[in-house]
Amino acid sequence: MGKKEIKLLLEAGIEMQKRNLTVETWGNLSLRDEHDHVYITPSGMPYDRLKEEDVVILNMDGTVYQGERKPSVEAMMHILIYQNRKDVSAIMHTHPVASAVFAVLHQPVPVITDEMAQAIGGAVQVTEYALPGSMELAENTVKALGNRQACLLANHGAVCVGKDFRECFKVAEVLESSSEIYQKALAVGTPHEIAEDKVKWMRDFALYHYGQK
Image (cartoon, rainbow, N blue to C red; front, side, top):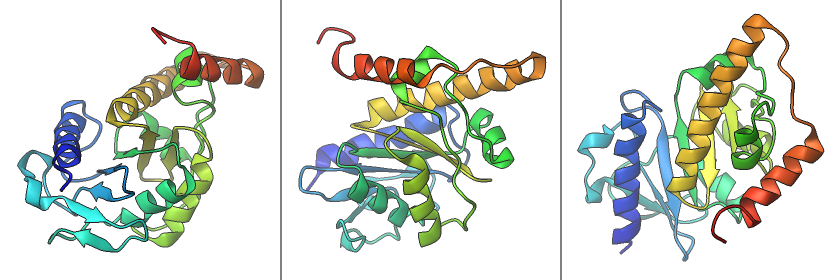
């Protein structure tokens, strides 16, 4: 079952590495289907060597529905996000460089570009620190994510969510470029944040009015 979802998951893992959004076997990805089954990458396996049978399928309570591999250690983080965000059907946990600077500083990235407002929908918050793979980290992630499309895991990485992997990649790229801009702006002056009402307007415009809709 789920040949389409498995194919999308495997392709996204390779693409994540190509775009330098992670290193080695770190990070993880998942996809939720219309039956509320969660397809997730296995723990500690190279993305470019994964085969269909390596993908693990979970129930929405985190138990294994199908698959012989051990799922990603962050499986419950994915599950809790899906349980709390009905609008999310794809999750990408990345380990990029620019946003990691703010993850280790425990410093949120404010909305300083129009692209951030449109793609992410608000400031990118940082979780309280918790050990990788712990339920505490999963709960902290849901809290930091809120109703936005990305958050930072303290001293760890980033989580980007969307309706599909295409949106996840857009969110991840916008987070990285905005983090780099913010870092450079801080070095030479005081960055100016976009007002919250303008952020809400742009997010709504991006969701419901932008493009050929």
